[in-house]
Image (cartoon, rainbow, N blue to C red):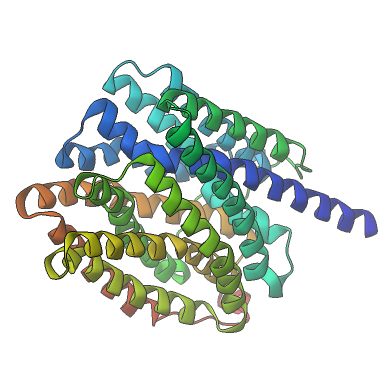
Length: 396
């Protein structure tokens, strides 16, 4: 038993290290990608919205991808995903002479990150005890944020003082994703066997599926259009996004630990309800600040909304732990998480198209008024969460 416990601690430390390296790669991409699109390809708002279809398509198909790779196990899938993300960033840096080619590498990066997304909580919970899921996932998230802080600091310093190019920045991000893949590759892989359940559609998980879809719709509006507002309306450059990213990361290190503890102490319904209420207020801030306040103050308010929204990203843990607690079978968890990711990306591909057209027709305010409606729906659904202590008793 001591050897098994030691292996678990070693694997957890390696997983934290991988999260740190992946956080650096993702942080570089987050800081520069929207400015890269604007400066290199000069996209309009409507084209930026349509671009989310190919960018999010890998997320939509992730359920199928993970089913095909189910024989490999979660750890190997995470390793392959990090390697694919690194390859995508390398392509963005070195092999994107045209917009069409750039889309291919953008999709490769997206595929890699979406492969990692559903298996990360599954791996983290497999290295945890039942009563500490939230705290353990909070620790994993915090290490990713430490990596993001390093990335944001690098982007700020290199773009501000060293005239860093987008291409070199992408290549450096790719290297750190390779380091992340190597760290995961050193983990104990577990048994190589196909899961008995590859596709899971149970009535018991219906609320999780709906929450995932609604959350994906709201999150995609912020992911696509919040930075685009800052770029197009307030002319924010990569250096400022790096500063905002550092603020988000420092705030999130604390909030992710707090969210993890709140999940364990107050439960998923409380956490998701509070998130929905805050997001409703943030949507109104995005929509109306520029109409109420002078430009300078409005920019500060919208930047604050950007920070608060991104600082709450860890609330996704609550949806994962909710599923884990109601799961009929532990083999349901990863395929159901991947199903949730696929459902999120149905919204992720459709919503930005309408958002871009709304922006073009009525201004960016209309986009965030729509997001406020979605946040209110999320509030209503979160209040319906109930967790029974013996999910096996409800097995279908």
